[in-house]
Length: 539
Image 1 (cartoon, one colour):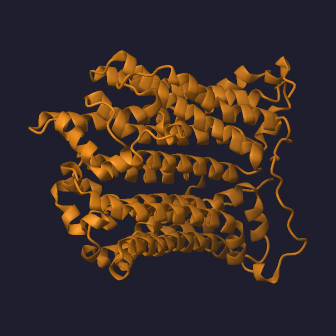
Image 2 (image 1 turned 135 degrees about the horizontal axis):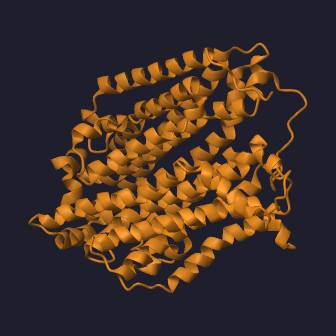
Image 3 (image 1 turned 180 degrees about the vertical axis):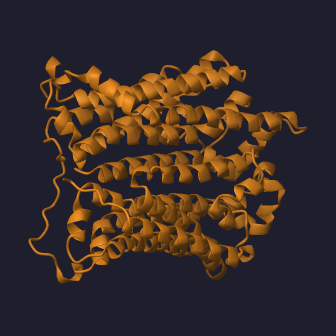
């Protein structure tokens, strides 16, 4: 790779352009981590004011096999240490997603829309675009890290530990920015790049959980950025020298991206797309068959990931349930004895299924948003010009999204039930219990798919609001678990009606039916809106 100074010409101008385009989104993922830090700090401060005390509560968390397996042991028995322990995965998720989506938006998405080709008509070097967006994400992550550090200092944390933690979180965000630049080099669509990036983020979370399950200090902590706080150890020794390792590790995918970017054409990918047959097969004669073909590969990837996830959770759940020692915080969520009601053996697996249902909702929403992608690339206009009706075209993708998400949850119930039943030696009871847990999450997942369909049908330019709704439901869950809000506010989320704290036999089937009706109404409004609005054209 022969790098010249002219290859970076125009980087500053592009940086200012990207900064202006992200003037609303950039502050969102910079300040959201600070809100999460302060919210969790408020919860731990409330624990400290009780008779039990924060130190006693954190010691109890360390002795809880379920909490330790999910979050790992607490590194420092203090308010600052509690913040690090509880928020690191949330902060990494926010900055990781923010960095990924920002990079893909200003690189691969701009190439798809032709904006990059227009920009390169001016005096712009071949690495200018990539460098500008990396600088943008670097600035955003550093700003978030500084704000996190200042927040912890304001709560009484030492400056050294606070800035070390902020720098660790910034390094995690920069790593996923690099993953974003790497993924856009491989395939020629932004959807594929997002899929690769989200898969890397999911793999990192799985490795972090595996590290926590092994005691928190296995070799995996060096391999996944989501466990780097156990390498740098803020407030628990402050190993600042480890930041050098994190910085080098975070830079690797970006360096690879620069090398690959010089070996591909604008708009193309390193992995070339397969050319299709000259004539379509007879079974592709319907819009539904075409929608399935477009989404089949994506669905199969989600299916493999879902099965691997639930098999791991179901296999270790009996081990954790036999360990005993459930913390008062976990068993007393919502001021109820839900662990006794659900059954101690099902606590870990029920939480795992609940978390995965939130992720399956992401699949359902992205499957619906395939409609927008097809429209943006001009294929919708071409299809509707033939003997394909608007209702049939949109409903075909909605059916794939609905049936695909339902299939993921059904398969998760089958795989999880079989694994758990074999592990416990009680296949008949264990299978049906876990299968019911999984299938009961279909209505809330379909509600989010309906919200996405409504936004696409009426206001396709603001479909990003669907992700705001999804994030809001996740934040409601975090706020309820940390006792910031009570159950009455939690009921805003459709997932609360199939919550992990509710025993399967106590679920309200009527409520789940009304959620299905709500999703049908939202979807119907979206279909009606699409039939009566203009379709984006390439002209």
